[in-house]
Image (cartoon, rainbow, N blue to C red; front, side, top):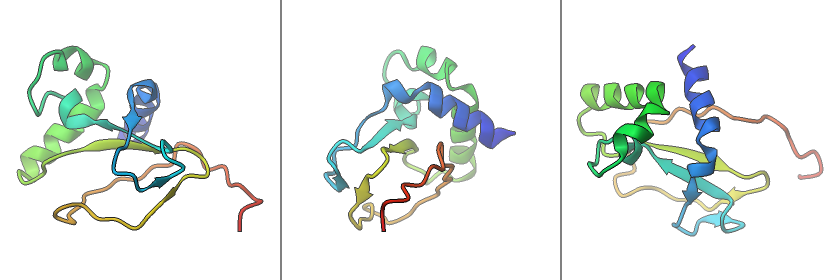
Length: 112
């Protein structure tokens, strides 16, 4: 289904994720992300067409979301390394449309 297609595209793109820079992840570098507005050519910039070709289902979903909800200003894939903790936080508008799908459901049984 669509969610599986998005998850597969995210997994295939993991090497292109960059470290999230807000400084709220511990350890630092445990939260990585990929800016889908950039990749899908919704912010402009060169090379988006070739990058978007590798994320066809994802870019179609992001474009559909923007057409339906024109106030959407960004979209990300995020990845947390095992053991990463995030400090409480919110964005500038505190508005979110999120779809969470764990890539791994392995649980560290030694953690409280």
